[in-house]
Image: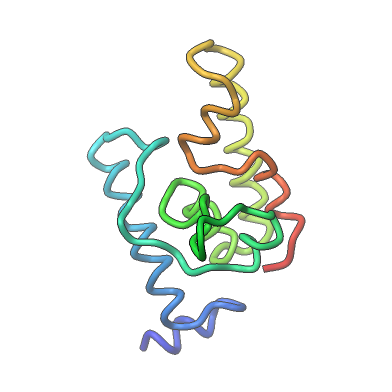
Length: 131
């Protein structure tokens, strides 16, 4: 059954789909229990992807610094699992929310917020690259 479901997603195999869904579930649980989302990190991680490489995300040894078990990992999972149009709408909405937060509060800089969330500074280019 897992193999059949994974065939519905371009460039995602059964094992990768399981990794994506595990991480998505962890973040969903954080939201459901009203916990702090923006800086949450799960012990599980998503697979290394072409997106990590194309965005030039730095590595510590063989592990990418961003986008493995943080909020940006969730964004990458959505990039691979959502249809392109749905992902673009999600990204536009997320961009508006982040801009509104940064414009309405002086609590932290954009760079600090991105670091807490595990976002590289060029994260908006994610929809420019093929999966």
